[in-house]
Image 1 (cartoon, rainbow, N blue to C red):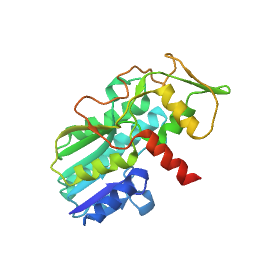
Image 2: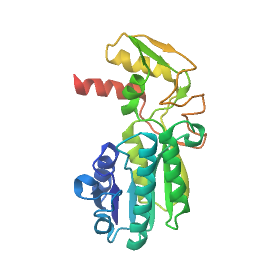
Image 3: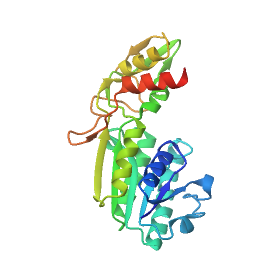
Image 4: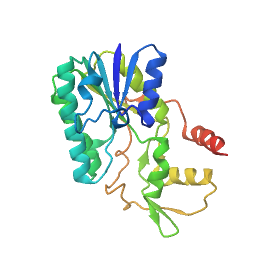
Length: 252
């Protein structure tokens, strides 16, 4: 089976490419680095020729509201046209849990627009919505910098190891299209401020984290449902504390 991974040289994409190749699939890592650009359309037809499956894990270079919306809309339309011409049988895309619950986030609005285009296409599809990656906890923590400390919401968050997300994506890519949405999240839920304290402690960082229900999440207001999965979601096996221990060992 030929599978094209859009965004195939990034954190998620390179992992999926490796998994699929180990399982014997002809897998193409498509990205601007390899001459494939979904915004301009460059290299798309050549990359998708003979492909049965496309896995889209690409991300916008800018998260500014208008730029991120334009990226996902333009990229999706170009990709759908190329897939239709190539006879692609299954489109798999990575999305984010809770898109409808955070309308104040420009990024979430853009991802929701991407999902809408995928659903409207005639190409069979599977959407995987994942919670926030462990690898992004540092950036999430830093988004709450307030003077010499941090001010973060105590709303629940259910982070997941990116490797666990990749395992699910690789599985979905070789399966039958569900023409719907699958959710995946980590095994534990934490108040966001508590998660930040765990992360900072692993770095020996003693700066204070203040819980503030008014604190935003990249411009959006949170509650305990915003960033967690529904009851029927798949659950990744890796716990945050175990991931932290391995990450700390790798950098020591």
